[in-house]
Image (cartoon, rainbow, N blue to C red; front, side):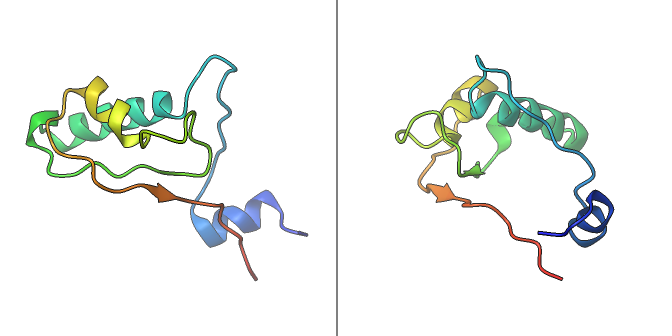
Length: 92
């Protein structure tokens, strides 16, 4: 694509990339991120109204990745949507 890491960072704000281990599911880093976000916001998982997880790499086609995230963080909100993110193209 001819895009340098610096250019991608400047255009998207993405400064790093992480790779999952073979034993990790898509929900694993999502749970870590959710827990960190809850702590930063100073709220509990049972106070959430919605959980949205966008991915093009779910471990299973069903249920939506947000379902195991909801369960593992202890949220009670319903999961009604499935969002696929086929990837983001950075254009100059």
